[in-house]
Amino acid sequence: QVQLVESGGALVQAGGSLRLSCAASGRTFSSYAMGWFRQAPGKEREFVAAISGSGGSTRYAESMEGRSSVSRDNDKNTVLLQMNSLKPEDTAVYFCAGRARPRIGVRADEYDYWGQGSQVTVSS
Image (cartoon, rainbow, N blue to C red; front, side, top):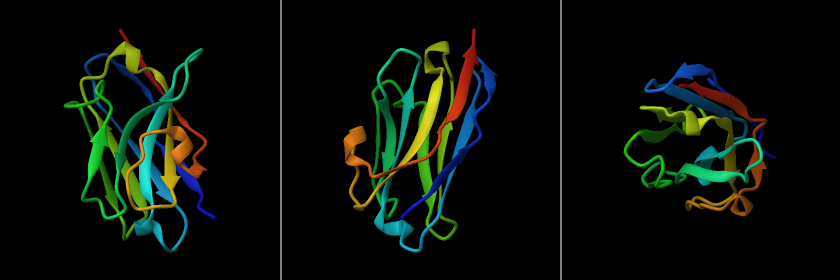
């Protein structure tokens, strides 16, 4: 069982930056691919970014490509999502997710564990 806890969500102005953090429990953290998803009111949960278990591979949603960066520290069991040049349409609850395989997944149903979510609000 893996427990995930996100932090770092906040209200930020358009054009600003934010870093989300996800702390994971468990001894085999490096065997899990980790992903970030988001869900805006009235919309489906969508993929944002993901990183492989080793950290050697990353993948981003097209909407976040070039203005976000996902990283992990397997010694500290943490995953970070750095987001820059934020837009009002980035407003959503952001979820950290863990996949019980080291390879990246981009669909929500590929992930086995979920955090409680962290609210990101971008004002115009």
